[in-house]
Amino acid sequence: MKKVAIIMGSDSDLPIVEKGINVLKEYGIPFEVHVYSAHRTPAETAEFVKGARDNGFGVIIAAAGMAAHLAGAVAANTVLPVIGIPVSCKNTGGFDALLATVQMPSGIPVATVAIDGAANAALLAIQMLALSDNELYQKLLNARETGREKVLSKNQEIEQKFNV
Image 1: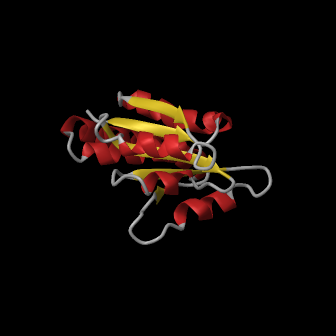
Image 2: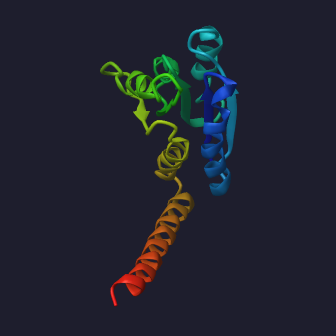
């Protein structure tokens, strides 16, 4: 199975990123986590990303706040799928990071999830890997069915309480 690379611009992003790490663990997806900065370590970032496919990675998740150039810098150096996680900050709530992550030039796509949306970034990476892995695909289907059953159970509880 291909690995998922998780790159964060700063270790301060770890509390957000851990939500995605937990999802990858839950599904048994191999991954690596790194701290690289689009601005402070551009050469190291590019070197890692350019070698990612040869090193067994199938998807790269990039998390960054504020200027949030990391996902774009990553995508500029690979044709592997890149998923950007805009990270919130106290000054703007992460709206600036969202715009920086989602507004990529034509030809350099970054799939972008919600601000602080690490769990969905991990799930999207898993969906990408599941395109060529039937067992993983089935795990995703099972998880959707479990989610469906939980909602229907809650609905039944609410209906019984209020719809007498």
